[in-house]
Image (cartoon, rainbow, N blue to C red; front, side, top):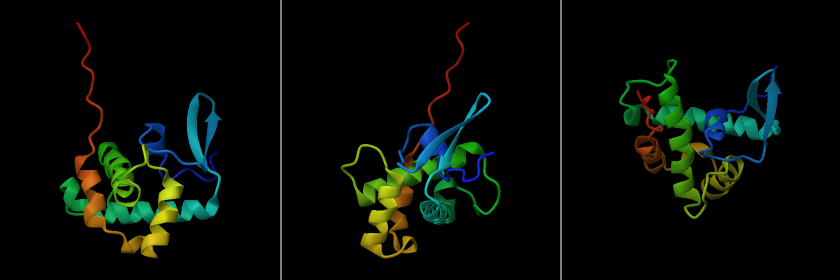
Amino acid sequence: MNPLPCIFERALLCQAAVCEAARKVAIAEREFLACGDPVARVACGELLALLRKNSAFALKVKTTQRILPHAMNMKIQCGGLIGLRDVIDPQATAPNVIALIKRARAEYGALDALPFSRIIQGVAHWQTRPRRTPKP
């Protein structure tokens, strides 16, 4: 159905980030995001794996190698991209995934050389929207 699903689909759908490679795909009544750039998708996968690996302490779990609840995945994706933006391009209004990855590689050489101690602060500080309680 979706041959190249967007790695940061959750962050893009909640409008915490933008990406010029993301393409909307509608299947029945559901909306998905597909990646229009297979090379960039590999880089996004590498970044998300590094964010997951380095987020365990901020999420107060021993390991992130297991299946995580939706809220933790949202913190990793949204908070991680915001933390990366704060390190790479603090003047940007919203994290642009592909642009941030390109600049990170230009400045640090490889994604695993990024200062994750600073980036993960975004994960620790990011909060989901508060639930609305139904009015009686």
